[in-house]
Structures are given as C-alpha cells and as structure tokens.
Amino acid sequence: MKIDELDLDYRLLRLFLTIYDEGSVTAAAHRLDVGQPTVSHGLDRLRQIIGDPLFVRSGRSVAPTAHADEIAPQVRGLLQGMRGLTRVVAFDPDNADHSARFVLGANDYEVAVILPALMKRLQRCSADVRLQVVSVPGVERMVKWLRDGTIDHAITIDQSGKHGDIARQGLFRERMRCFYDPAFHDGPPDTLDRYCAASHARVMIGANDSSEIDDILRGLGRSRRTVLQVPTFASVANLIRGTDIIATLPSRLAGSMMQDFGQFDLPLEFREYGFAQYWHVRNAANAAHKWLRSEIFRASRGLG
Image (cartoon, rainbow, N blue to C red; front, top):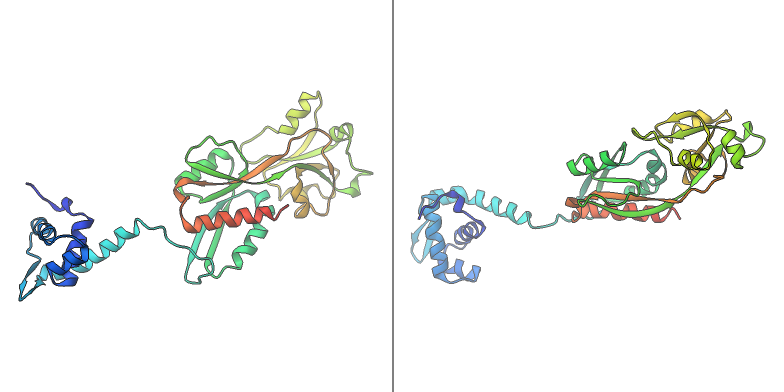
C-alpha cells in the first residue's frame, strides 16, 4: 500500500504525542482508551509515513529517536492549532486581557442616533474594544462589503431579506418630520399647500436620485421645489439655518443635529419605516460579534 505524508491525520499525530509523553506504548493505549494492538498498528503507520523508527525500546519503556525529539514540538503546536479550529473563541467585555476590533457600516443618521448610546456602553468595558465606522452608499454595496469582509456589521434602513448569507435583526421604527428655521417663517408651513410652496432641502445617499416623498406628491398631482440636495444629514442644519428652506428628515434627528429648529408633522401620509442591523452568517457564532450585536440591539431599545 502506498503511504505518504498526506496520510497523517489528527489521530495519528495525537497517538505519536501520547507515546512521546508517556514513554510507553501500553501507557499510551490506556490514556487513549484503546487496545495496545491499535496503538502498535498506528505507530507502524507513522513509521512508514515519516520514515523513522520514532521510538526504540529502552528497558521496559520506549525512548524517542532524535527525529522524534525534533518533531515533537511541531506536532504539539499543530494539534493545538487543530483543536482551536473546533472551538469558538471566548470574548468577555469585562476581561482586560480580551480585545475586539469591529468595522461598522453606518451613515450619519445611524451615527447620530445609535452610536452615542453604543459608545457609552463600549467605553464601560474593561476589554480593549475598538470601533471603526465607514459610510455605506447603498444596500448592494453593504451586501458586497459584508461578504468580502470590508465591514463586519451594518446598520441601515430595514430591507426585505433577499440574500441568504446576510442575517438581519430589526432595531426600531422611524417616521418623517419637517424642520425649519422659525426666524424665517411666520408659522410652520404645515398645510399641504404651504408645504409644496416652500423651498426644500433633501438628503439622497449614494447614487439614488428618487424620493418617496416626491413620488407621493406626484400621485396627489402635486410637487415641491427642491433647491438643495446633499448626501448627508449632518450638512442639512448648517445649510438651511438662516434661510427659509425646510427639510423633511427622520424624526429622531430632532434630538441631535436638528434640535434648534422648529418642526411639524409632514402634511401627507407617509408610512413609518424600520432600521435593522446586518451581518454575514460567517460571523454568526463569533463571541465578540454576538456581543456587539447584542449591545447595538440594547442601545436601540433605549431609543423608545
């Protein structure tokens, strides 16, 4: 029978190391809970594969050859590595010896709404936890980056699940609200006529150039005049402050970047929408990733 190094497996390597540590074929069989003929047969296979006797008789025991002494540390390290492949690495946020690095895909709305509470939670950890945030221009890019490992997690508008390898968890619901500088309006333009007559700013992320609000207005036979379009929510406040431009934005921005502005309900029917976190299924069992997902979920629950 032709035998080469590819015939080496975990059982044979473990058998070699057990004989090496015990100094006896009989003791090795007892420790492995197998018969002595099984150990002897395995040792014969090892000798054929490696091309060395490995162990020679020395009184009532066996002694390793020089080659066995040479390869024993390598085999020990190899077995430890193989055992590590079958174990999920633990992560304890209260253990200062533990560490974790995450890349989170999130745009400036999620940064403004979720990350303040999340960062307070992360900073209370004893473990060395570091977070890098990158903006994600669109759902397809998010999916691609989750798949290729560019990002570990993402928080964005809840999308219907179309990708079997991308997991999701719903976080919270949101609605739209209108914001304006009260110094430049006698009152809130909160009727449909006054809303359509106003100058508007809108946020369009990525390559998108269609707005659900404009689609709804068209369905009503109406339209609005958009004088400003920007790619981020964070830029809206500075650009419309001191002007009569109004902006229709997610309501939770009232507690951060739009907190000094007047606000009113959108004067047309607009459905609530959800936000969710996403991750690739390869990270589903990773202890550190599971912990981060739970912290993101807990932070979102605190939004009310």
